[in-house]
Figure 1 (spheres, rainbow over the protein chains, first blue to last red):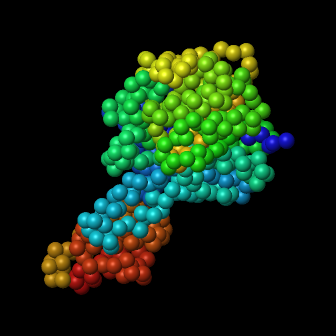
Figure 2: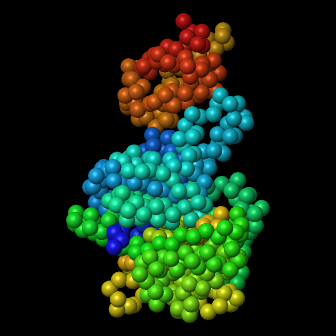
Figure 3: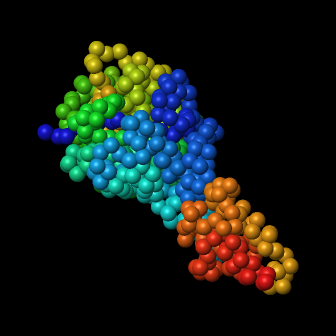
Amino acid sequence: MKRRVVITGIGAVTPLGIGAQLLHDKAVAGMSGIKDGKGLCCEFDGAQVLGRRENFRMDRFAQLAVVAAREALEQAGWGDTPPVDADRVPCIIGSAIGGLMTLEEEIEKMRVDGASAVSPLTVPKLMANAAAAHISMRFGLRGETAAIVSACSGGAQAIVAAIRAIRSGEADAAVAGGAEAATTPFTTAIFTTAGALSPTGSSVPFSSERDGFILGEGAGVLVLEAAEVAQARGATILGEIVGFGVRSDAHHITAPEPNGTSAAAAVQAALDDGGLTAADVDYINAHGTGTKLNDATEIMALRAALGQNLNSIPLSSSKSYLGHLLGAAGAVEAIATLLALRNRQLPPVHGLRQADPELGELALLKSAQPLNDEKPLLVGLSNSMGFGGHNVTLALRG
Amino acid sequence: MKDLATKHSRDSIDTFVRTLIQDMGVEASEISESANLEDLGLDSLDVVELSQGVKKQLLIPVAPGDFANVVTIADAVTLIAEKAGIA
């Protein structure tokens, strides 16, 4: 019998604003955080929300993570220290790149002013584990602290790592998520030359005209607890992560495996792990980047795993209104999925008018849709795929 | 050295150090001559930043190692003034 892992807190900083519920409310209201072809957290000022001292010592990606964590921990009713043995609380935060803005600034300093001008804070700011380390320091989490670095599936794999720690009995609770702030002219140039970024800046996932993804920044953090631990302390349970599947393409460093075999295996593994069948799935929050190849492969994979059921399962992509949050995407989208289930209101594929007919029959959401169902709890899948061939599916109930 | 000594004064260095420490996020109200750097939450990495700022912006030849015995703001100002050739 697996130990059940429940969600007791969520926090998000996204291009739609600061706050998880805000992310949901604005998404279902048909709003988008994408401006001028980028998904930036325009409302976020690190110095203002964290204080000037913290702002000075942290890269933006870590600041976003700490603020998301603060919201999640507050909701979970945790104080400055966890309500369980702190040694049994890991903190795992995914990031594709880490503190890229810091890296770029300091390399420029070295170029202009020489080696002796490079800040000694460079490494503590840019290292990919800085977000997890700062959360651990601030909230007294003394279990394992680490970053999962697996490109755009890092946030999802961080959640998986936390679930494993709780299920194995090594941890009683965990703080997990993802953070990214790597939307710079440099990454824009890289993804443009790679042909992955939308040249129009108006790409819509799953549409006929999709021409690439849109870069975004943000963070999402979840508080996970063993069900019996959360129940014993009388915590409000927001939902449950009932299953996960993680598989690798073993194919190409950037291109998805053409048949989506491994991505399909991840979906199937998540269903099996959660004791679910395709018929149980009420909503799919797809990876849905908006590149030709990703969306086609992802649908192929979903079809292979879910069969005819896929035709009628409501499907959308948070990237249509946030952009691609890279290592934060998996965590933010798991939160978006949970909120969709809890609120019984599904966010749309923002801007979708004409779905790509080559994707076959799908229940793509062109506008927000209520989810009316007699079932007391609903099931959602959240997909993540990363450069390197990483495929992750989380199955949530809420 | 002579140029530096005429260009700077103990007061101007003091003002610069306070501004730099404020830029590191320390509240102005906490900063006084006798304030202990450690008590202000500044660690060895911040002291390197301080040294770099003095060297780059005031052009006074200090190195992080020079700050080894610096405890208070006044100590830092004295050290920097000495390096600028101000008696």
